[in-house]
Image (tube, rainbow, N blue to C red; front, side, top):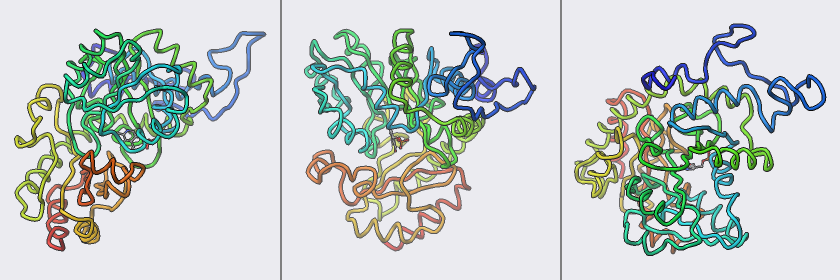
Length: 382
Ligand SMILES: Cc1ncc(COP(=O)(O)O)c(C=O)c1O
């Protein structure tokens, strides 16, 4: 399969006809348990928490799309991040991008820190800060690039080189880019994580998460966590992601085209005080985006000045929905401070630059002229 080009992989990796029936689509195996062939022998599966034929196919597909060795899927992106950090031990040190998804910060600050794991947030765009932060007990450097919602970028290859020299593994949350637009493993990452809820599923109808591993040792470690902690993805939702990824490359083309068009329109609009979109030459890290991404995606954030301005903007939208989440076919807008980053204290939001006037856009695959017209009408109300 690895000889095929990307769009072919998206349709066929893990998605071959069912050997028993010839069904072209992967069947949804709704069975919690499987008949054994004897004592200690089976046909490949024994119990669905440990493994399920539908889930196996999705994991095969996702490993191929990210260029990894294996993939393990979980009930949500947060369950995948939980499985990522679960193998850490008391006394270990973990470094995390300073401006991550609020749910990741909530997990690390309100749950994982209680297990004696020290978590340090570092601006990973600053490689000197990373060098200073690394310690002999640093096991993991977790990168989110672009960051949520400020669209700051991290040079993945540079971080991997520095972290590996210090003996730490690097994981990358690739949710905002999708495997089509960014390949962290090719840049040196050890583990790739996605909330499959977003672009991979693509239709806003199911939650999920994945960890893609690059070595057998990681694969075994993650499989143990998946089986022991049990945060698996259901066979039905595995099917939805399998179906979604068949059109992922096609959808990403449209997301990309629409994202660029909307960003260009918004970058010159007088009501937009600032726009954060790595595809614009004015973005301070545009060069990193050009170097490590295969596109700029369709995520962007606007500064409209005040929470009231954001309220008027959201109320003025007719087509773009005021809803949290991203990566679906439909365009969404959300007020970062009260949605994705509500878990952070006001002080932490202020430190990070997540102001009350920020609104994040996930541009979908509708007609770009309709989207721009909707943005124009809503901005007129600001
Ligand atoms: C970048 C990023 N990582 C992880 C998550 C968590 O994923 P989920 O909502 O599927 O648990 C999200 C959710 O918005 C996200 O945006």
